[in-house]
Length: 194
Image (cartoon, rainbow, N blue to C red; front, side):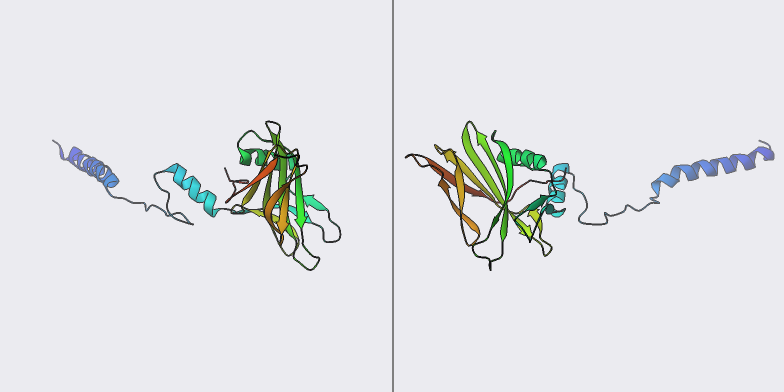
């Protein structure tokens, strides 16, 4: 073989060997997530972890200090949809209100977001306590309990309060045999991030 061809052939073979060996060396370093723990192999676990750590509160409304008015930040229609989802049993919620509870004017007011509706013709209600900030903004937290009333033979049920906390229920017209059952469930998934 002439000497003229040996030099390019050697250069070509060195380039090919280099290209074959280059992928064997890792030239890039994997990055770590900026916040939290690295993702797992289970996407559902990752989503659950994000829901627990991301935004546990949401601004719902502002309360006026001069009068008893409340200005809703989240539309009532969206709140009704979320209440229906929270009930999860076919209850249709058609009324949303924020109830201020205060035993005496000197006591700190406690606000409850309340959804009222019907399931199979029977009254149902759910109340979730709201957190109040210094500027009278009302926030819902994901760890706030849900107070749920189920009516059995009552046309309307009411929450009973003591020291601004829900302690029981009462039936609007107790014609004998009617009752309002109260159950308390921990936490809520009102504003879960998708």
